[in-house]
Amino acid sequence: MSTSPGRRGHVTGLPEWDRCAVMGVVNVTPDSFSDGGRWFDTTAAVKHGLDLVAQGADLIDVGGESTRPGATRVDEDEELKRVIPVVQGLSSEGVAVSVDTMRASVAERSLATGASLVNDVSGGLADPAMIPVVAAAGAPFVVMHWRGFLEGGNVKGTYEDVVSEVVAELHARVEAVIEGGIAPERIVVDPGLGFSKEAAHDLKLLAHLEELRALGHPLLVAASRKRFLGHVLAGDQGAPPPARERDAATAAVSAIAAHQGAWAVRVHEVRATADAVRVARAVEGAQ
Image 1 (cartoon, helix red, strand yellow):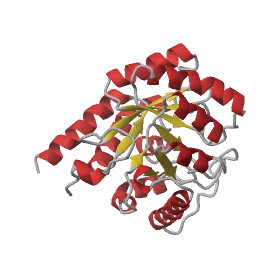
Image 2 (spheres, rainbow, N blue to C red; image 1 turned 60 degrees about the vertical axis):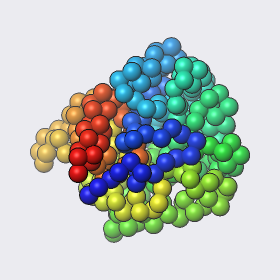
Image 3 (tube, one colour; image 1 turned 120 degrees about the horizontal axis):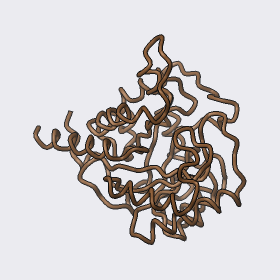
Image 4 (tube, rainbow, N blue to C red; image 1 turned 180 degrees about the vertical axis):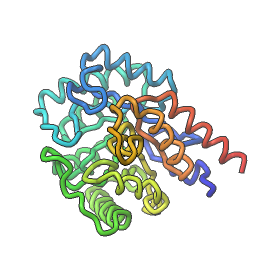
C-alpha cells in the first residue's frame, strides 16, 4: 500500500512534514502510568521537552492530568499551574506544542501562551466550553474516541465490531465538532487506543487504520507503552513488562502506523520512533 505524505493529510495551523510526524510526550504529573513524577518540576519538564526535540520529536504534547484507568482528576488551578509554565517555556524556544487537556480554561490559556494544538482525549465532551474556545482561537483540535472518564477502570469497553463502532462514533463526534465551529481542515482523529478498549480491540484497530483514515482527517496514533503492548509482550502466561520496557514495541507500532498513513504518532521515547518513521518513509519512497 502506498502512503505518500500527501495522503497523510495536512493540519492547517501546523507545520507540514514529509513523513509521519513524531509527537513527544511530556507528562507534568505525579501519577502518569508511564513516567509519573519524572518531569513534575517545570524546569525538568521543559528540559525534557527540548531533549525530545533534539532526539527527533516534531511537536511536544504537554499534559498536567493523568488519564490512565483509575486516575482521579486534578482541580483546574492545579492543572493550570502544572501546564502553563511548561507550554510557555517550550513555545518560547520555538517548539510546536500540543496541550493535552479536557478543560477549556487550560486549552485557552495554553493557546494564548503559545500552544499550537489542543489534544482533548474526550473530543470536547468533558467540558462543553472546549469546542467554542478552540473554534474562537482557530486552533487545530484532536478528536479522540472516548466513552467516558476512567476513574472506575476501563469502562464501557464492549463492542460487537470495534472498528465499525469506533469509526461511526468518531464520525458523529467530528460532525458535532465541525458544527461547533472548528474548521474541518484543523481536525485530527485518534482511535483512543486503551480507552475503554481491551488489548484485542486495540490490535484490531491498528490492523484497520485505513478505515479510520477514510474519515477524511489526519490520523494520530497514540499507542506508546500502553497495556495492550504489555499483553502482547507477555504472551499467554507471562506477566506484562513495566511500561518503560515497552519502547521497542512502541517503535514497532510507530512503523506500522507510519506505513498505514498515520499523520503522527504520540510516544514517550522518541529516538527509536523517529528512526522508525524515517525508515517507513524511505521504504515508501522506494516503491
